[in-house]
Amino acid sequence: MAEACLGRPIAADIRVGETLDALFVTPHDPAQGTSLAAVLKRSLPVALRRTGDGLRVPTDVAMRLPTQVPGLDLRWASDACRFIENRRSATAATPGLLRALQLLKQRGVEYATQLIADSAGLTTLDAHQIVNVAAMTLSGGYGLCVFDEQAPARPSLSYLLTIYWSRATRRISQ
Image 1 (cartoon, one colour):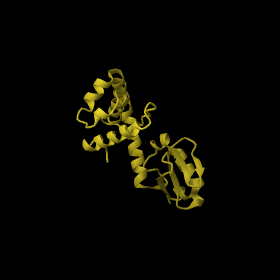
Image 2: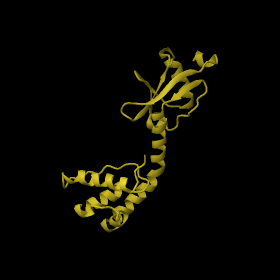
Image 3: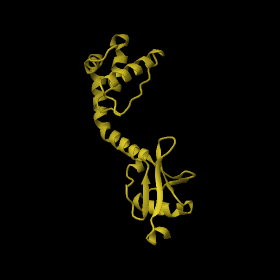
Image 4: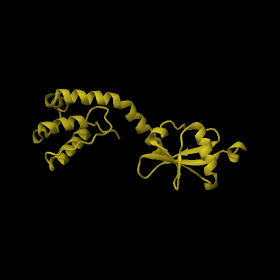
């Protein structure tokens, strides 16, 4: 930790891991890995795993990672910033989405049809698929995967109609 103590911050890059489930903090100088871990531990009192890619910061911990840490010169990749932004947004939206999904489940196909009444192609879907499309396109939604075991060829139709309808009504976030 001598580098940080002598007034020279440890330079490190923060980027998203290949599997998109964690951030990695990698020192510019590999010899500073132990010092980097010690400084980060003061900001994040959890065990971080060292890998060949750097210190692995799991999603739940990454959301608490400060953008500035004394003793470190953190350089955030744009995809790492987006990673944090997306997860914070999804975490904030989840309670409302769960309530909306419960309401949709309770009210069924008639309610679902009202939610997506401006969609073309509903006549090609079964009742449960209409509910699925409505669920996948709830306002503020961040993504939903629905498996339909009853008709192997139709899940792709439900998905394609959802994408088409979402783009047509500009409900997909860029």
